Amino acid sequence: MAVGKSAIGQQLAAHLGVPFIDTDIVIVENHGTIADIFAGRGEHAFREIEARTVASAVEDSAGSGAVISLGGGAVLDSGTQQLLERCTVVYLEGDAPTVADRIARNTGRPLLAGDAMERWEALFATRRPVYERLADITLDVRQGSVTEICLRLEDKLRNFAALKQEVEQ
Image (cartoon, rainbow, N blue to C red):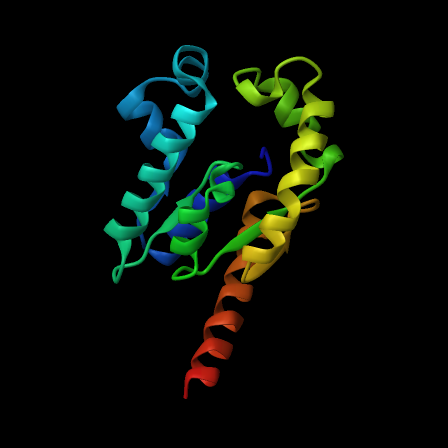
């Protein structure tokens, strides 16, 4: 949450020449703002919409490839976790100092109402083990520009693909 998934994902997709899909943007386009969904229908309804959106993005890009950015809580859904087994999953690893400015600028995150940093730290403590377990690649995003981080990610992706191909042969 707030580690730069959208900015890094957009740049990576452009470099790779594949589509970029931000599931949060797809949700907003089809269902209204995330804050409004939370307020009007609750987190459970949002998570159902999110799981269907992620499933559609993964299915639509199967075979052709895409960079898909998921909301920070999307991976908590067991069905989403199963879908991600077929994907190369990248965990963009940040920490509280890395995300503090972004969180302060974006007050539209329903799960961060109140003391945003305290809520972020609690959510991160719960989600981090899931991120780490699902990740094929972990990339530290605490330092560097979006371009520098994207280039490091491209290198890691190439190395991962080569290793995966070697194992499959």
